[in-house]
Length: 181
Image (cartoon, rainbow, N blue to C red; front, side, top):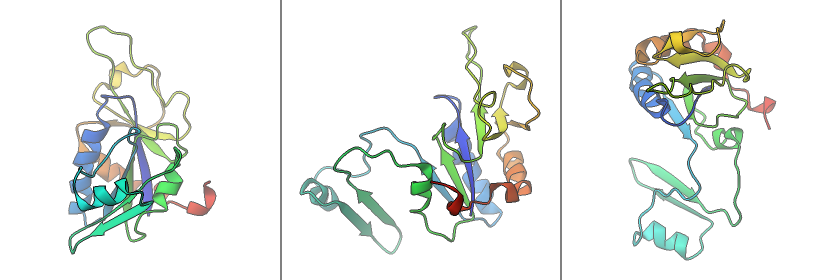
């Protein structure tokens, strides 16, 4: 399995880029999974549904499955900050690429999605300046980057080219779970 993160500030275009990369990688015969960082109280369940009722009754885990999909919902008795590595361990092992969205401070190799602030505002900070895990920058404003970089600068709007760069750099993104906490 190969793992690459997509990190950046809110509104930079991480979700759109990941959404565009998934079908491009799938068209190349690759199986893709996504690990997404979410806010505290997100929910994928709906009040009144059987699974919601089971959770409300106190179930620690509810697995719901059909012949088309499976979903696991786990309730934490106390807030738990799971690492990206703990979440990767939950995935099916027969996946080619995992696209990790968010987890800005994680120790997985990542592509920074960067856009300058608009309308003369103060430019957004860039992660690549301080984060050694940023391997490339995807942007639609390369001239606006706050500092020069030797890292590849990719066109944020060209998912095909980004997918090609990922595949060409594939060995770099091989995930070894034994090297992480």
